[in-house]
Length: 465
Image (tube, rainbow, N blue to C red; front, side, top):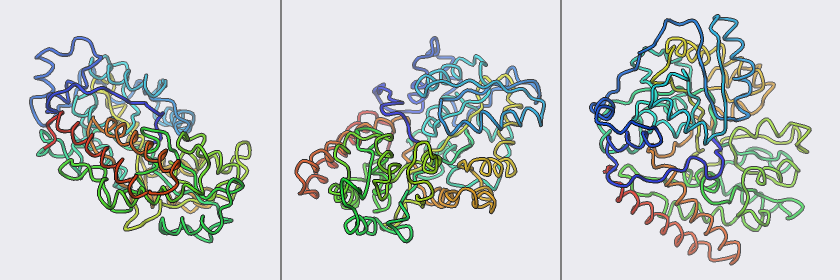
């Protein structure tokens, strides 16, 4: 998911990151929840109990809260109305900015106010919201998962994670589903069909094509989000993953400062002669504009761009842009950032909320979700539906990208990791643009600094190993 730059930034509490500390993190900003009774109730066992106070049988009404995002428009404007018509359950839908909604949802869940039944969330909220009992354990309330849902998307809602490193105090817990994926947002390769006979298979293929065909500033070979923090990290991760590097290893040590990570950053730097000037300050709008103007051969971006490439109001490349999973080197490694929904711990109508989420993630509804405007559905059958694919050529690419995706580390500290790495990546890019050579040394220097800083932060937090 493409987040607003500098969004979801939270200061460290300091001290060892234990189960108790993770729960305390969630309690920041919620008045009166630091008492022993709350912590004993939330942190005393490896499993959380579903909160059912105030619950009613499915019926009546439910309230859904969300952050504002264009991808939510069909969900909000079409499918909520359809659910109301089919079930008789009324749905109230409220949305606000990303940062404001994160705080509102957290405070509502911790205080058990019952203002919301369903939270629409960024998947990197799951560690904090699940560990703090802000959202309910869906397994415990009998949520029926549609087996048609793509596994890599489904796994974004588990806590602790099914794979990858775990916080020490959660290492032996059984993974449980706390949030269900509703939109499979994932990074794709967008490439101009006039300059590629087929989707480039490797990053070397991308480089070869731009080297022979790009003619800046009339035609750039590549565009990127280069601004510090989350944007440039999202530019780098598909390369890092494909070169065999890791954001963090199983033991939580940074995995990007070795040969794989350096090679990935070198390859990105090799695109500099074929990228727009000022790319180090580009975010999504600037990055995508050159593609939509027909001045760029390729870039990587999340699925939100698919609806813009054929929009005649904003695009000069209608019908020209194709999509694929991000290129391989040793393997493919698109970054994934799904939209997920959790049921509030203080939900007034958890049965109605459960019914809605089971309904929306059903194969029939997901098929119609994909057929409607090519939205990033979460089921295999929807993303491969012949009618949907005929109208929306990007759907198979989304399925392929999700199936090969690599998740980010599952910890409340992940945004801090992004801040650190993203700051040094931006500095490396700026230096490489200025010097126009010495990319290996530049990459090694800045990635090593980032790795050391993250390692020190992890050590200060404790609770990782």
